[in-house]
Length: 106
Length: 509
Image (tube, rainbow over all chains, first blue to last red; front, side, top):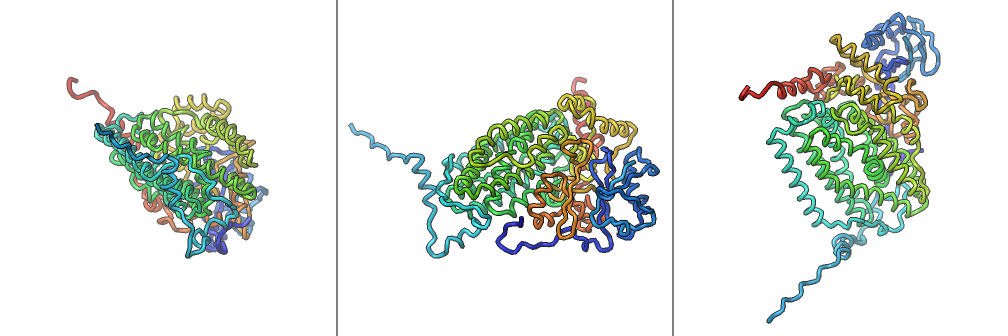
């Protein structure tokens, strides 16, 4: 259903991919850890290798939990699909696009 | 002996009211009616007889001002007395004021927004009775905004977090929740606004949104806020009547209005309910002396009074209870715990402080939430408490994923599985949009063109629109000063409170 308006109602999305240039937003959710209220949101380059993303972006955030063990991170999922990421593959190569939701468990 | 002349007869109230209100209405002669009232047809609502709208209060301008002036005099006498006698020292605890910070930052600016929009309705609705009701409500809302500022600003002399609420309302992440709700309503047509604010907000959920703050004030020694609540009460009952009058009038005017109204009730129940999640967190976690639990309030004010009382009446018009209401009922044992977790995780970036519930508080929560607190939420608080006992404090070192519609961090769980976070996505113009629940997803999918424009604070920070990339830069842009935010224990508020209440009297000791 369209918005009812007195004029052509057409506005761009506030967070469209082009607003982030070579970067994109990625959400990461630590499944089953209620210490964090929600998934986290990061701005990262599309070309960033997955290994660097995990070590340099996800781990510092997850480390707010004193029980976080970087070696135990497993079970990656992209939305609802299982993901077997190679550390040197870029986010773009892995199909992790703008505003994608990743899950892991630890 | 002369006899006094009989006094001129006073007009009966009804006639006097008619002369003072209805006679101010006239038929346009040199502009077309559609030009005079350009906004009352495009939403699809059909009105056949504007005079079918009755004002049950029969209020006139002179009576209105006289009555409001008397109420103001009484309120300001209380405010003066409280300020002059250092009344703030009699509060239950300084941590109580976190609830009032949330109120002035989150609610007071909404009063002002409501004032603006009711002024617009007072000009653009076609019937004289609804125009006059909207005019009174517009002035009420302006008065509420002003009296709340005067009531609460007294605390600004002694406590953090009260200084830049207006700027914060426009900028700070958790305040985008109430702000965006009102922006959504104000950018809708006049009839949708009536259903959103007058009906869903002021009638359906007013007792859940407003009363907890006022009862909280009364239980925790905050005489000024309580007095403000009393002062606003008669206005609120008039607003509730307007909400009910509006919906019945619209439903009676044309059968074709019924499905349009139903869709607005479905949308606005969920929008207002989601915002009330902040009130749920306040009630269960921020009051040193709790009034009642969120769950109890929800059952009494919403399930009993609205689902049990109002909706059976509305069934006559073909209106059913709001869509997704069963999801709201399913999460009543979880809502406050999940939402306070957000505030606790992120209070380093808020203009209030939070703390892990202590032993007594936890015992109260266990008692109020026998099926869920001990099993699901207490273990996490215990982990926080252990970290704090060792001198730490766990915050969320990053930014959260937000719901595209309610703008609350995506914290809510599946209605049938409280251990599994609820993620919903929609795709629109090849872009992914995330929502926290079936309710918010339904709202997004109904008007994606509107909600893609949402100013999501997290994404705006990442676009570089909020002062800079680092936390101190963003806090500075928010207007949050050192000490407004973070952990309550050890905060400037807590330290001053302890100092003011320590030691024996100097004389005679």
